[in-house]
Image (cartoon, rainbow, N blue to C red; front, side):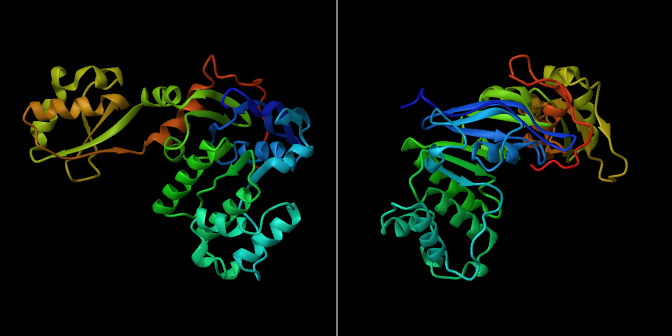
Length: 338
């Protein structure tokens, strides 16, 4: 049932030489919850996951699984897929799973076929893993993590190498597993991927937690950012005149600090660029249409949801309620293993 904390990190710290890779990280996840662990590459996600899985000993703090300190016997109830999964390349996918089942013990013979079907790998089960694509290895890695019916899943970038269809299939797999009561902590550096899967996120930057809360709260903070909107129209002069009109520009563009449109002369295509509050883009386009401007192109440049999220972390610092750790920063990123 929800409400029971089954995974927790308490002020985890990990140093590599003089570099502070993980800086007093606190996080938790409840039974059946999917928590997104967000951050750019090198933020400390993988190192944190490795400490939760008992693969790396923290320099300070503690990790707990099902109320017991890590490392301990409760790790047998954890499925992991941390960094790119490794297999015996000369064995088939099925044989690799047989070997994993033997090592773990207590896994029914029919479970291997069941889990291969679940991750849609039955067709490739008897091929040698050396012939697998990266996406196929990712699927087999997820199958191995789920083989012993764990209570907790720790997943590090599980959709690497998958095409959009494969990503959607893995996403549905994880939702199905969570509905069965499995707690999932899934890391990613791609906000657009995580937002389709989770309700709560923990965002980490420079080894420290910058945000811990509902996804909607983070998206609201991100969407308050401004974007550069590139506009083209059948009549560029009418577009410029409309954008200079205060009534057309509206509150969203004024809030972005834009006094008027600006052209990029290097383009040579008479495109116009304006700074607009992210949430005000639809309203601005409606106003242009109402002013009789025939817009032929409208797209944001250099700023998508992921980019805005990264700028939010790098530029704004932690929100007041983010649960961030101490402000100590590393002198160098050298040696960081995340």
